[in-house]
Amino acid sequence: MVNTSTRSDGRFLSGMFFRVLPAQIILLLLTGINNIVDGLVGSNFFGPTTASVIGLYAPFQTIWIGIGIVLMVGSQVLCARYMGSGNLQKIRGIFSLNITLTVAILSIATILSFTLASPIAAFLGASPVNAEALAGFIVGRGFGLIPMILASQLVAFLSLEGKDKINYFATSAMIVVNIGMDLFFAICFREMGIAGLGIATAISQWVYMIAAGWIFLTPKVSLSFSFRNILWKETWGLLKTGFPNALALFLLSIRSSTFNRVMGAYDPTMISVAVLATYTMLSLIFESFGKGIAAAGRIMTSLFYGEEDGRSIVKVIRIIFSKGMLIVLAASAASFLLADAAAGLFYVDPLSKAHQLTAMTMRYGSVVLFLQAVYFIFHDYFQAIGRNGIVNILSALEGIGFMLPPGLLLIPKMGVRGFMFTLIIAYALLALVGPVCAIIFWKRMPKTLSEWMMIPADFGAPENECMNASIHNLEEAVSTAEKVGRFCLERGIDAKKANCAALALEEMCLGIIKERFETDPKKKHTIELRAVHKGRDLFMSMKDDCRPFSPKDRAELVNPQDNSPKSLSIRVFMGVVKETEYRLILGMNVFTVTV
Image (cartoon, rainbow, N blue to C red; front, side, top):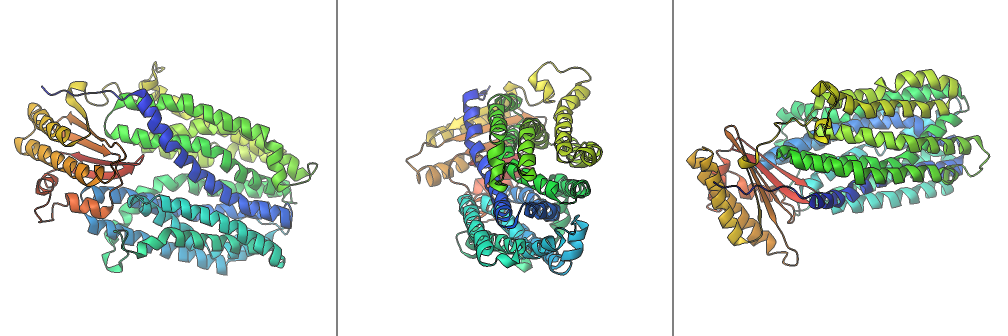
């Protein structure tokens, strides 16, 4: 009997985790830095209430960011499905649908910004102190709404094409242009006030979109826009798939707008609202570590959950709660120790109310950061293992459920301090939701980490129903393919499917080795295979660390409707499989099939 079962090594998993973690943190850091730029320039050139304008505008912007996430996540899921089956035409149809929906929806947002700026400012909670400034800022930022969201969609498709480095360049260019334009408008067009800062940010977002999207106008990528190819029938599926990921943002918009109004009533000078906005901008920097750790854990857990590898999932969680949380503790300590210095960036006078309140929020925020990280880890973990009901409940509780009641009680009495107590109370409760769900799931106190993470005892296939192999050269590819064929036959899988699986695996490995290993001889590459027999199905996962496949590469390799003689056995195999998917994860090509 074939049995090449192996267990994931903890050191290997730790290396994977810390390989993907920096990219997750850097992207969040860049976003936080870009948001801080307007606040820094505005506070130093136009006074402390400038930050209140940015804070009041945030809920309006969050709505459109949430819509962008719906479109982006829905597109990613559908494209992974079609990329697995090699259907390049449908991938291009999803790309065209995404771009069309994005431009149409954000055109409405732009028109609203231009025509209803003053009513929107009033709805967002502006006071006589900053109503005119907020209306001008809404108009200025309105110029950049389409490129802001469209660029985020293009970046998602850049990842599909394996060209993530362009995003780093585009994001860096956006930050540099934003800083330069903010200073230019603040110095040369000071009379425009914060409206000029809004236009400056809009210009930087156009730069971001052009820097990220120019490549789609060239033959260097396989995706191109075509109105005729739009898959209109996938609209509902795209929106339904992406909505859960944006629910928290929509609720955050409601919560932020509500708290801004309550804080404005507590402090008509709007200094307190400005402090909340400043804290929000600064906290994006420090909380990026906790969010990045949770995101890296979600990526790895999702991969191993799909492979039904419970042992590796537990090892990943152990890495997160040990090494990952040490990073969070360091970020929390930095928030506490740098509180005065951070406040001084926005409000130079250490005796001013704005400076003292901002420093206070950063110290309280050090506690919030730790509790937030625990919540993010559980939230992203449940998302990775497909427990969408719990994810939606957590999003609702974070958005309003655990936030609004204490906030509405404490903020009118304590102002900014009441807001920080609200965050501590809410995230302490949110951090307990995951463990409480585990107790409810088992109807007793869990005894192991596996039980705390709600992994059933029978999760995954027994070791004698699994096959793992590492392939480094042509000889190993051929021998592994033979083992897969025997593995299938020994478990009662149809002989035709077993032979197709073996031939397809051999040909895919040979193609990868010849066309990808040999084009990069300086690096030692590996193909990792995992085959799992469960019930009547065979699940196979292939991972390689070569350059990413483009949609066109995948279509040429696996499309069963391609009648050319090249890779015929692969396409015959693709014609009998139940489900296929291709993803680029942790810098690896991951191709999964269910027979």
